[in-house]
Image (tube, rainbow, N blue to C red; front, side, top):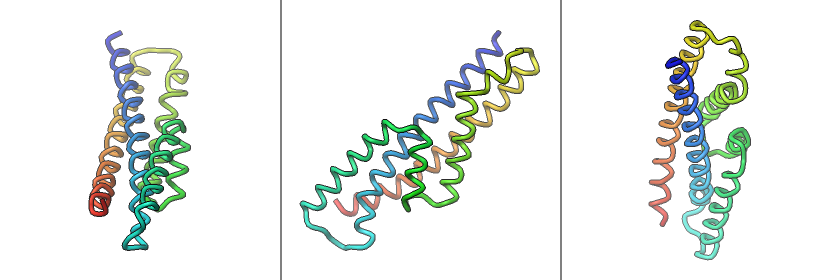
Amino acid sequence: MDAMNEVYRLIGLVVNNSQVIEHNLAYGLSLHRIVSVFYERDSIPIKEYELIEEEAALLRKRMSEMTLGSVINFASDTKCFKPVLLKRLKSVLTERNYVIHQLILDQLELNDQSIAAMTSYLRVVVDDTNELNERLASRIRVLEKEYDAIV
C-alpha cells in the first residue's frame, strides 16, 4: 500500500495548490480593484482612495467564501488576467474537480495498474497547479509594483 500513500500525498498537493490558487486569485483581484482606478486617472481624492481600499478588502473576504469556480468566473468579468491565463485557470479547475470529486470513484477496483494510472495523472495535475501558481505570482508581482507606485 506504499503506492496508495503516494496517491494520497499527491491528492494532498493538488488540494494545497488549489488553495494557493484561490488565495492568489483573491489577492490579485483585490489589488487590481485598487490599481485599475489609476489606469484612467492620475489621482483621486484620499476619501475615494480609502473607499476603494475598503472595497478591495471586502472583495477579498467575499472571495475567500466562494468556490474556486466562482472566483474564476468573477475573474473572467475583470480585465485583471489575460484570456489565455483565464483559459488555463478553467482547465486546471476541471482537473482539480476531477481529482476531488471523481478520481477515487473511477478507480474502485484498485490494482497496480489503476494505482499507477492515478499516480501518473496526479503528477500532471500537481505540475499544472504549480505552473499556474507561478503564472499567478508573476501577475501579482506586476500588480504589487503598480500598487507600490500609487501608495
